[in-house]
Structures are given as structure tokens and as C-alpha cells.
Image (cartoon, rainbow, N blue to C red; front, side):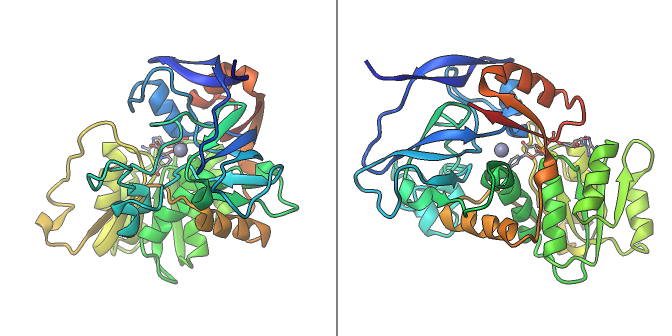
Length: 358
Ligand SMILES: NC(=O)c1ccc[n+]([C@@H]2O[C@H](COP(=O)([O-])OP(=O)(O)OC[C@H]3O[C@@H](n4cnc5c(N)ncnc54)[C@H](O)[C@@H]3O)[C@@H](O)[C@H]2O)c1
Ligand SMILES: [Zn+2]
């Protein structure tokens, strides 16, 4: 009989619980990782609530930090016992989508071309990281060794939150001196704010409604913070920019209202960079969109993965350019995953990210 492990499984809508599953068998291109630390993403909460559908019985989670337990026969250049991370998105690097420059939109192995989001497999189409062990497919392209001296918690944001937040800033094409607004300062928005600073933005405006998050935004690079509960955010941003509008607005929530505000504050020719996961159709207001003639760019990004992306993100942390340590606000054993979801999904007790340890 196969050895068993604990895993956080979607039982049904509204219920993610710990269950026993067999430790996965390792194929030639895979690696088996013993998870040492993982965490919960806002997207996992969408899954819990049934706003983003995945199969019942699936292990959730896509943010692994761990140690190589076993390597497939075709995977070279790594060794058992090595500390590694893998991106939340783990592309095959062989599909049309990958070779066309969009590995996150990995076409999968069907040979039928593009399948949106095909690179997002952990906790979406295959078992995920909230477990004692994780099978990493296409390990040769996805395992990234953790530099000595960095703790699990220092690299815990790299697989998803940091890669996504930075992608929002990168896709926005921020130039030195740009004015940038970031709507929502959850973990993703905070990393977008940090990314905007690293890209050289001249003025960063961060919007949220939670005092601790606005304080964290200032710590990570926001010059101005706006509380949507007490000000008309669109008016305020237009005032701050002397009516010019912002060069780039980053949406990091996934609601009509924030998407729309991000468009309303954008200068003609500006870029709306959207990161949120939406669960309803979006409506584009004609006025804010200049009837389609505003030279606006609306871009979306799915978290970039792969070992080179992960290496770069860990380099930023290793060189001291960014410290996200303060984002890990709570610690739970994997055994207490239900309590961890409860705290995280209700955003209680100032939680930003929880470290989950098997
Ligand atoms: N694109 C990707 O690859 C990717 C990856 C991971 C997560 N996501 C998505 O990104 C989004 C953000 O994730 P997160 O974990 O940071 O979410 P979160 O739920 O932790 O944070 C959302 C924040 O939005 C704030 N907020 C609520 N209403 C607001 C409003 N009207 N204006 C401004 N702020 C408001 C809340 O106070 C909270 O701080 C989610 O939709 C998530 O699914 C996308
Ligand atoms: Zn995520």
C-alpha cells in the first residue's frame, strides 16, 4: 500500500478540510517535494466559496516551499534534500502557448493549442501544495533552489503573490517618474505597490479600506494612501494628478467597482493593468473609455512561473531590495488548516498571509 499523507481538500462548496491521500508516485519528469511551509491565497478563498470552480476532492494550494524528497529519472542538476520553491504556475514549457511567449497560458498537452490559464495546475487541475507532499510536474523547468540564508518565510511570497504583484507593475509598463495607483492593498496589491516602486514610479497612490494594510502600503512604497470608505477615490486621484489622470492603474481585487475606478482615473494613453480574479461579467463605461478612442491599454496578467522567474524574485529578496517578512502575520500547523482558512477568509486579526506548516 502507498504511504499516506495529510492534505487540505475541497470537500464541497464552503468546506476545505484535512484528509488522507496517498503520497504521489514520481514519474520521470516529476519531483516530489516535502512541503516545509505553504500558505493560503485569496484565490483559494474564491475556490472555497465556489466563485472559482475546481473538482471536489482536489488538494488546494499553489504556494510551495519545501525540500526535494524524490526526483524523476529525467530530472537532472538537483539533489534530494535540496531546498526549493516552485511557482504557483508551473508550465510545461513545451506547448504552443509556452513557445509563443505566454507560458502561464500553457496550452497543456492536448495539442489543441491555447487553453487559458493552462499553466496554473497546482490546486486547480492537479493536487496542490497544502499537503505534506507535492508532486511538481515538469520539474526541470519549475524547481528553483532557495539561496542559502533565506528562510522559508522570506521566499514564501515568491511562488504567487510577489510574482503576480510584480507582473501587474511590469505589464503596466511603468516608466521612471510615472504616477501609479494600485486599487486594493491585499497581499497582491501590496506586492504591486512594491513592484511600482522598484520600477521607478514617481508617485504611488494606494487604495484600500483597512488601516493596517494602508500602513503596510506606505512601508512598501506608497506615497499617498486613500481609504475608499471615507473619500471619493476617483475625485481624489484626479485632484492629486491635477486632472491629468494616472499613467498606470493596477487593479488588484477583481470587482466591477475597482475595475471601473481604475479606468476612470486613467489618463488617455494610460495602461490599466488588471490582476483581480473576476467572478462576474465586467461592464466598460463608455465615457471613461473615451468611446474606445482613448489609446487606453487594458492588460491582464496571470502570475508568471518557472525557475528563472523564481530565481529573479528570490534575488530581489536576497539582495535586500525588498523585505516582505512583515506580511506573514500568522502561523498555523497544517492540522489546523480549517482555522487558518476561517481567519484568512474573514480577514480577522489584521491577517495578511498565514504560514502553514505540515
Ligand atoms: N492574476 C493572478 O495571477 C492572481 C494571482 C493570485 C491572486 N489573484 C487575485 O488577486 C485578487 C487580490 O488577491 P489578494 O489575496 O490580495 O486579496 P485580498 O482579499 O486579501 O485583498 C483584497 C483587498 O481589497 C480591499 N478592498 C475591498 N474593497 C475595496 C475597494 N472598493 N477599493 C479598494 N480596496 C478594496 C480589502 O480591504 C482587501 O485588503 C483576488 O481576486 C485574487 O483572486 C490573481
Ligand atoms: Zn494565488
